[in-house]
Amino acid sequence: MGVDRFVREIVFGLEDSFVSTLGALTGIAAGTGSRYVVILSGLVLIVVEALSMSAGSYLSSKSAREVFDRRQKQDSSRVLQERVDDGMTIDDVLVRARLSKKTKARVLQALAKERALWMKEVHRCEHRYAPAVSGSPIAAGMIMGIFYLMGGLVPLAAYFILPLERAVIPSIVVTGVALFVMGVLKARYVGGHWLKSGMEMMLVSLSAALLGFLIGSLAANLL
Image (cartoon, rainbow, N blue to C red; front, side, top):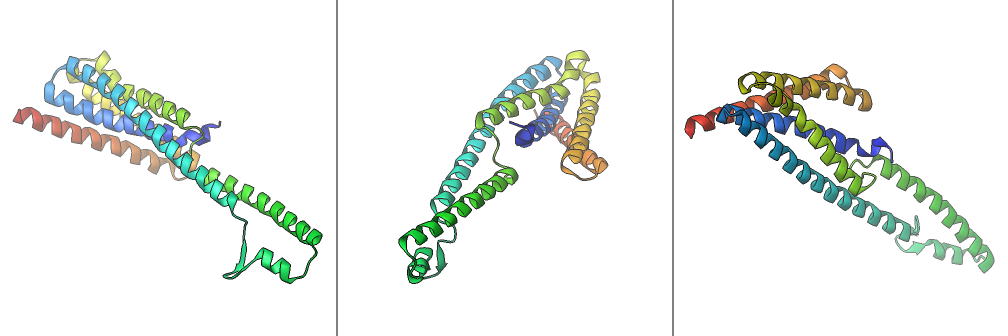
């Protein structure tokens, strides 16, 4: 299985983990003022969310795979262009042409061969460009969970190393840089301007951090 099949899981897992974890940690730090609570809450949040995202990715990929396989079976069970018009099938046309059974069989065999080749190409193109269909639902779930865990540790790392009051800004900066780099890599992979893509992802991170800080501060004042 190529990595291409799991780009959705990798990008979604990292981006969602960066943004949601950073926002939550910043809010908890502002609301509690406790480094221990921030680290404990962060670890619990990352693990629970990673498991949830992993399960969700498995179920969504499995459902997408089932839908795609059912479509393939439905397509394969129909004769391509089986009706010439609303009231006449290919078989009717061959009967009206007064072909012998042997000739008719050859014609149907040739049509079936062409149909098989055509459907194979259709399925190949559909599978290649269907973004919801990953290579394996189990692998998709595992990759989503692993990359979510990896992403969540980035904003949390500063709280392990620095005191609480000095960890908030480095956590935001490191996560913003990580999102910027991911945006640049995504632009190079799928196309687009690298600076625009990187800045877009970084601004999402900063917005999440600001929102988390405001919610945490408001909760601390109210409670």
